[in-house]
Image (cartoon, rainbow, N blue to C red):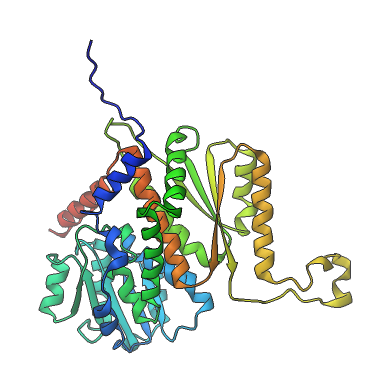
Length: 404
């Protein structure tokens, strides 16, 4: 008797690793840590405007935003980076009112070149302040309509490789160009990526951590299908949003067996969400894994002062003299301990040494590799997004009909 298998088996770590090595030939983000960025730095050092506004949505902006907002509280940037990633007119005009259009450089990012939100924003901005080579930079695929627009109008154009998906483009020109414009150390970003990539593909530290976590999540996906990130710093809020897109758009797929896969991402900020979502984690259904992210050194030693007799009725002098950074870490540790005591909630802890380009790049590149590894285990196409294309097509068709 002969059976024809139409289901997938969870492969060995070596088989998965071999698949990822093969992917390096046609999935562009793997090679970004080793790129030459001298042309980016040469161009961006001549951008003098105070405001840098990114016109983009989703993967075209979330990666750069995650890096910028992580660095912002501890860096003294001379310029301001603003992400205009909505077609909500209230938000659009609120953002525009805060800037001087005559002192603004616009970075238009659209991989396809026909992202309707981005082009809509671009047209509106152009009506307010003519977009030309003096105040605009375009990032898109080489043969897109947006690249043709840049060529016709003699606007600086950076090509975005076709094999780099939007949600994997943080360390491509899509992220590096605007970040470099405001003074982010983009070399150090790539150094962080190299550290993770070299370790993983040399089968050392990151290899074991990523393979082990990916295998656990896949083997237990029926029971624990929700992954919550608990980031203990408000500077990681944009990172959480980036992670949600990376995770959901990459892993919500139909596999080779025709089975729908889903590992649902949730982004939380501590200690704020200790007062909401933590209750669900602790006493709710055991369908969630939790990853805690802590930062050892926030580069801020602000302390809780002792205010003497005025606060005696509150009887909390045990916090006097404690740095807020230490309080944040202690709150994270207490929450982690409470989760571990439950003994049936899978959790792990990621500790970031300090706030700089190197460390945020390590975190983000490790997550990209983790998602690729999970996708390989699930035997899905990690890099497409067919589920979002139909809605785009319907919208465009309806707009064309109403325009006739």
